[in-house]
Image (cartoon, rainbow, N blue to C red; front, side):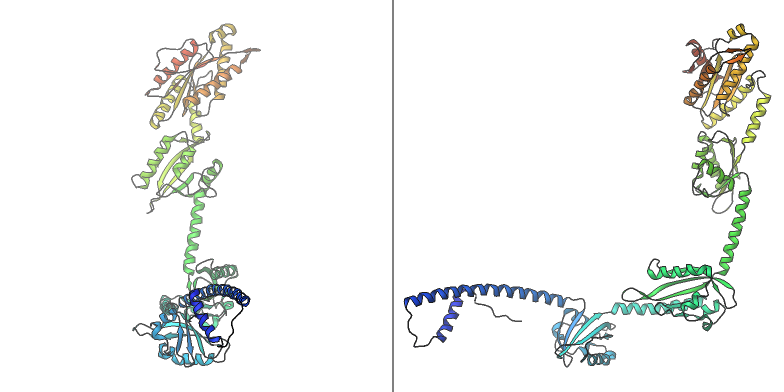
Length: 625
């Protein structure tokens, strides 16, 4: 498009005006008067200003129009689809760059040539028919065809939209490149054919569902799996779903809906299908959407049908076997846990779960998934050596270095009331699993302690005899040293006991000793030991007890003795006790530890009695009376 430009300057404009004026002025024109000339000059000046304003507006409008045309031309050229104008004989009058690219030639060479020359020869008759159909039609003619390639490459595919121009001078043609889509469809068809061939060879049934019509095509193998023919199976989705067991039907429909809506990538479902003889067979059906509409709606789904009845029978047999094994484990009174090679609890029995539930160990309902050693630390927090010994024993059994492992001594549970033995046996499988059992030996331990108490107690007070107490104390010291456990011993001596005997008599003194032991025993724990070393002197052994814990317990003894006088012959006999305490250090014998406590007791007596003193260094002397 060419525009006529306005004069570039006032001089050019004046020159043009003079030329036009000379052509219009008659030769016999008379001269103007001065007044007329002045009026004429004013009008001319005003008219000149008007012309200047008009010229400015015209220049601005022209600039805007040129910019709009430039933008329109760019949009036209770089449109993602090709566009071409054809005259009445089908020659190209105008086309954009996208159309030239699709046709594979320079735009200048294409103008004036017929578009039909660039259509694949096999589709040219179709192109001519489309042009004819567009004549006089108010709707665009749409069809897919191939363009001829001059480079030896396969022809490209385009979607054509042809509409007649309003003045019937030719056609408007829109070309959209669909080559990639066509290539993908061809690959899908090839892949589908290969896939069907592979499935037929594998013996799987195949189905194809037209989602829009509900029609389903079943393969011969599909029908054979259900004991019938393709005619027996039917051709609609209702025929298929009608064969699904009523308990499974809702799940199958939900799985189909999830695949169609995009909630799941594919369809997959195990269900029971009714055979022609009325029996049911377990099948696995899987499918995927292979075709969608332009708006993304699913059009076609294909899938497979596999008989998994044997697999289901095997699964059921394994389930029954697992239930039986669990029932056997649950019938045992010992607490059992199966560990994998990493020490994680994978299976438990009823006894284990009951104890774990009461004590808050692990995660219900099965109390599996946690680390066993962490659980064991929670059970016997005061006995870390037992945990370390169990750790080493489990590792040895899992590696096959030991046939079994058992803690040499029962461990004391954190609730303070139970004793358990610990045993580890291998499962002997490739997963290196082991079985850990906790046997509650609280009754045996209590019977053992009771037997020892009966055989080795002081006849007057019921406390352990000196010999028995020292023997048990040596065992506890050895155990504490082996497992690096804390241990504390208390030496107790009744204050001014000789005065009680002298004032109330020896029988009253015996009653005071008996009452004293009962008072102290009421403060002690079940695992603690009290023994009579001689006269009014006693010792208390506190296993797995630190200095802080022993100090607190000793203070309770002092306060309890002070608050519980002994009644004898109608009189209240009040008395107090002095205590010296010693904690296990590097001592290798109990007498050495007892000597520390004895030294501390001596200081308690010297500091005013009715008090506790702890050993500060190695003992140097005995206790005062």
